[in-house]
Amino acid sequence: MMRSLLCLLAALEIGTLGGCSSPRAGFYTLSSDATLERSGPAVPIGIVVGPVTVPELVDRPQMVTRVSDNQVAVNEFARWGESLKSNIPRAIAGNLVQLLGTGNVSVFPQGGEAGGYRVSVAILRFDSVPGDSVTIDALWTVHPPEQAALVTGHTVAHEPVTEPGYIAIAAAHSRALAAVSRDIAAAIRQTLPR
Image 1: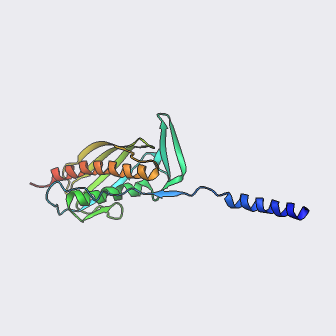
Image 2 (image 1 turned 90 degrees about the vertical axis):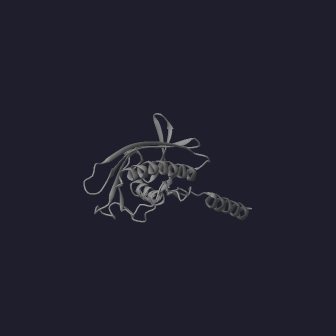
Image 3 (image 1 turned 60 degrees about the horizontal axis):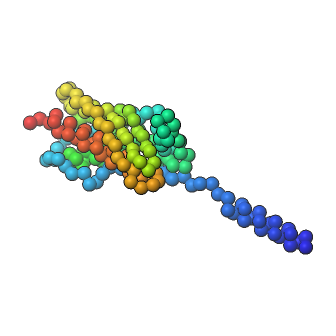
């Protein structure tokens, strides 16, 4: 009897330990939009994207989602695959390649500042509301080469979150960055010599 009871307790303990596991972290990235179409002829110019600044609230590995106007949630198991300060300029650079038809787009500081255009971006708002929408509020500046006049702009992009989960939030932010990129590309086209 005692032996049966010990075996039962051992089986229960093994079952409890085997069934107990911590949640797995998911890692997410922003991407450029390969479906963007060029709005004019290809432009053979060099562009460096960056630096990009982001609000301190979202400048962390964890995804931050908005619960209400005055509350956010920091999601320990939903994380960015790289910092937003690195991922945002990479997504914008990929979008500019599509929109302007140039392969000569790099990201600061790898691209340096030598010659060509430079695009700096200040992200003022990077909100994520699960199951609802995302918002990117961006101030951007296009620095044309040879001391030409700067072009500044302000883009506020709202995109719906069409599915549940964090991958839908990352996809919506990627679409919002495509809207920011379209405005930047239009400004670059305006500064080109006629």
